[in-house]
Length: 250
Image (cartoon, rainbow, N blue to C red; front, side, top):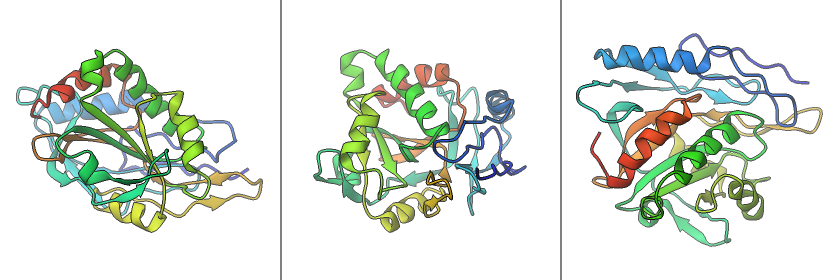
């Protein structure tokens, strides 16, 4: 069994996963750590967050994203980004087997983007599941105003059919994209997220190391304004998604 690498001391509130197919081990205090970070940010303190990895043997991203949150200025509970990232120019294959132009097909819409892989044992299903629960609590009209996009970091195994089956258990409206890993890595890098090539372990399991944060893009400018750390409480998504559906400014 591959060893799980300890999370970097620069990463706040992010669990370290294990290889796919092995028991999941979550870092104690993950959600409490995220809450403490947001509490500090609410006082106007800027934090440099290293985007961390899901999967054994993963390190932290090579770049950091500066974030800050003024409690009186933002209605969102997620962390407001000081730099608003452009939506990646990325064309991949969706779960119907058709080309999907991320920038064009989500233009002018509130969009949540997460990079991960279906055989991830902990962070990916937990994150997507929490978003799915929050989405289910929205009205049908609100649900139609938000695109939830899951981009595979293990396209060789995450075929359109595999992606669709996996996503359907969390949200049937969720968009799954798979394809050229080089394109995926470039798109993720433009958002400050690191992705490494999948590694096949001795026991046949696969580890895909990738940034484990969710970015929320607002319809007003198609830029990322809010970041959700790995381990974000479901209640945070439940609070913020109605705001995203309305396109409320961060």
